[in-house]
Image (cartoon, rainbow, N blue to C red; front, top):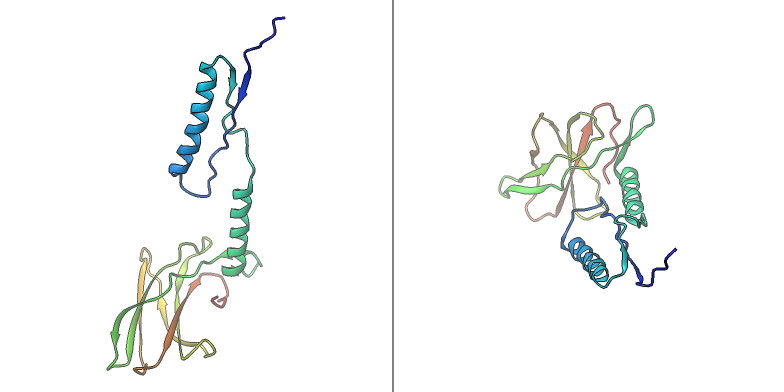
Length: 180
């Protein structure tokens, strides 16, 4: 058999992970591999480019840890003890302010996931003062199919006082857990 003396060249390139969108950095890295392998082939070498041969799994493991932490932080247990995600609604924002009437209307967006359970509504809380103050329930807001944006008017407030607001989502079949 004849011996090859023209040299060999090997390049590996991992599959892009599914933990984000493709971006220019992916294309930049890919073109470096592609140009190197093409150049070595033109130099007469046996060039091998097994695309997707290399995989470390670290981004996948990091995504799994992130999901586990989110389930522990935002999860709610069903009566059967199954932990389901119930991500919180978006943080409330002030929509309108009526200092003379002692009222603030806050708005928020519905959560992106409720673990496949029906969204029943929201509970609106506020507290006066600092972080050591107790939360007071202001109102219940019913969820409407197809609605994403919600609002509620909190009354009985005093001008010049410091307030904080939180909204908790309520889903079907799950005992109400406390917000984080």
